[in-house]
Image (cartoon, rainbow over all chains, first blue to last red; front, side, top):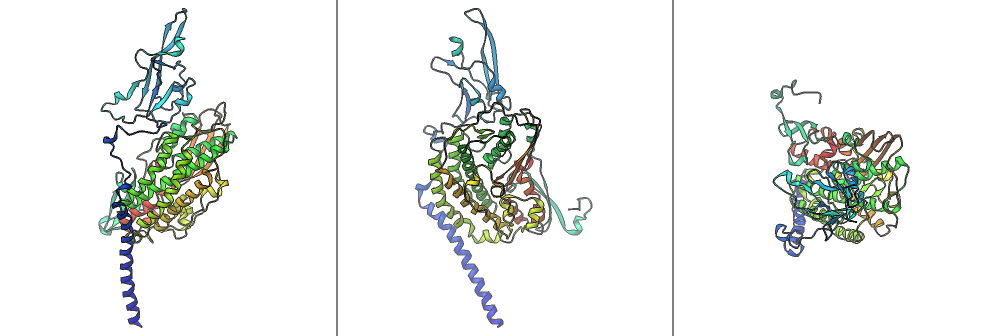
Length: 165
Length: 373
């Protein structure tokens, strides 16, 4: 009887070794399958493929003020986006000018966007009634100096469509 | 736990205290385990949290409801959609408004996709914790498909801030249904590969079976929810016991095991991925038409206290809002799942080897920013 149980133990011992090795081979089958099939590679060579790399249209890269071909933007300095921003990443600085009809008007002087504090919550874009804002698809934001992340979004010499009319 | 460093004669007991973390890779973040060892055996563990405390609850008091949603992404960043949904549901319930069926369907699909993505990353990292580096590549390969779906519709891959009180920030992309359907067929083929790679592996089984036993009583006493609690037979799935959004409309099983060890906490998550695929499968073809945002004049819940709980990928997330009728909450409090799940570790990892501590803390699936908030 003792012999029988010893034999059983020895049998179990070898069976466990066999099952263990079999389980390892089973796992290796998966990796082996992909090793011999290079068509299943999903990684991209990033810095080399920059030319053909295309992001999804909705991707929130950085905020921009939309300018048309005549260098016009649609900001009317209502400040809604700046108030909507949870962390004060937007500063809309207005200046007063005297229009052709002799009345003083507020127009956009500088639209300052702090990319360094922006959390990309996306509240500013739907907040704008004029649809003047959108998110661009750029994503390479690394710079050596933090001050470079503070951007003026209105292009030099640009003017608002609403002030021109 | 009663002993302190001062009163125990470490040399006599041959015990020594080491710190695991706050920069240890297998704590998955800045968490410190003050660990007392006797040889290789763990005597007790004191978790120290607070290294990534950002004061989200206090910060939220000065933000309006739509604004504070984006902070909830940064708690449990692997269930960002579900965290957003929790706040959105709480505010909507407080105001007594109902979102359209379309919003409910989309929210549920996004939440389940998020749950799968979270479990995929957990599976990858768990394998890596136990020395199987290959799992990391396989898990992230499939997670990428979900992140692409998110990126196309919401504009972000990880911290979406897409679900907002009153509906959604925007409608989903026209490709959303097609891509999600493709993902379901794709991932149903790939999930058996996960089992083949890791679940049956003898080294993995030896390191997880019977390790870190958590009894049902402990799970309830410590408030361990989510897959970690369900591995011990705790029926704590909020999607079943207090259904919200589109969950009353779908059929799915609550995955529970009664064994309560690391291996069965692992199995719960593996089977939950199948269940999540089934939920998405039932919803994706029947998304009804409807408005994606309610026409609300102002998001101001009435004066009072409101509570809403949802099931994130890690357990029960509760949102408690005290409103004084203004546009910002007077007090907001989050009952985060990881905070409760963490503190059981002293109970279940004691008397195990130090290498098992890595397996046990991995099986609890801790996200540290969610603990500290």
